[in-house]
Length: 170
Image (tube, rainbow, N blue to C red; front, side, top):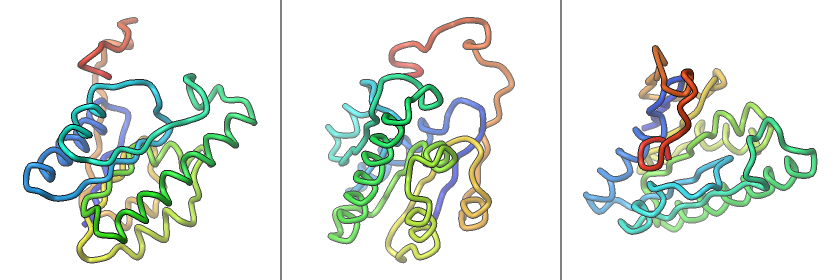
């Protein structure tokens, strides 16, 4: 089935990581692709230690909205490369659960091949589970998803000037 965790609230990646940990605990192969993320985070270490294959990266440490045109081109190349590698692993049965973390943002910013993403979610194989996360999902993701969960922010410490905290937000 296809899971979509979206919205402006905290918890999208956390939910995807939780599902990945559950799958790994049952011996289910996991490939976790993080679009537009490159900074060291705690979940990557743990997922890899548990046996997941994690693919991630972008051309700069800064926010995608502040990228130069060259950084956008390189980030799109990295994103498409990681996506293609993930698909290759899934075809080899090295993946039953495929997580595409922040795919909505990559889609909305034009930093991933939308045609390939749409093809995957429209033609998913029976034995595969796919998780999509991010803000403002395109209609096709909502339409194709079997589970649609919106994370809605009511209150967040960031709004009061509290920076992201190690082990909690990253």
